[in-house]
Image (tube, rainbow, N blue to C red; front, side, top):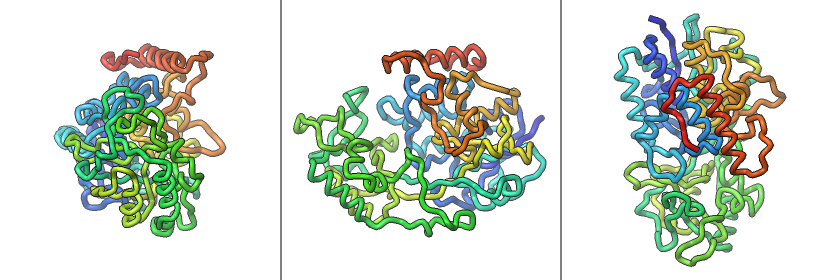
Length: 439
């Protein structure tokens, strides 16, 4: 029986472990929890979702939805579990994150071909190994990798949003609605007047924030905060200009207030966090405000005047590699070819993208996969990680990766992108016929 070591029981690591185990490999899965936790992880179970409970859109006419559809053809393991643990979120796949983590952990721990080693991985040897320790990799894992990497590493900071108790929301102001009334009314909306909006922006700008020195370590002692654009803290967005939020995360379009029958000046949306529907995530409100300031500032949001915070937002350091510089085309280290890199550490952004890299590496190692069609999101994400570029940045699933189509109508163009990609993936690598998605 073939053997493999997998370091990290996050999304990529769990996807890898289940695929290899089902393919009759003997898997050693290293996970330092519950003996040691990163700055952001809180629960002892596997596949913990830290920043949000949303795995983004299911529609194949979106980048994330198309990647999911392609992954189903490749035999993905975690997406079906996520769907079993889903909570209403319109066209998005959002999950009860505790239940999802528990279900994944149960499948891992019950599998006869997986041995769980609850200790921190500290030393690289000559065994076949996949490092899937994620963007919150410990200093010891970075120490183990360092001899095989250039002197400089890339990094960024990531922020998560607060969660509030549903019963503490004031529904004299807040209302249920999905944007443009598409799908079920799964979101709670908090409408701002013009005066309330500018008071909120001013409060964000004036509030006390965490400083970089609180998150420094020996690798990043001189850094300034740098963020993924999709995870930029709300107060950083507010700093860019007073109108930034209401043309971005607080945009009111398609969200007319049923109480006034008018479009608000701005709107904050809250998304269901769990299957009990008693906890809601403040969409777009990832933050680096100090806890006391979060309570004060976010209670300025109409409908949240007496909000009970079940979890405050926070900020943590995330790490990733300059993959084109350090990885071979098969995602192994150029300087240590028995070691592969998976998940966000490899330079992808997002939950689904992390799962995908785990799935991809399984096919690279087990099935000797050499390429995927360049008209697919999956193929282009792989290409992004191994193509030299001047300023490498983590990448998520988006149609900008794909070869362009000369179609002016935006809706028809997205449909054509999806149809072309799914036909290509099924023709060349259709492992899972049940993964077909209707447009």
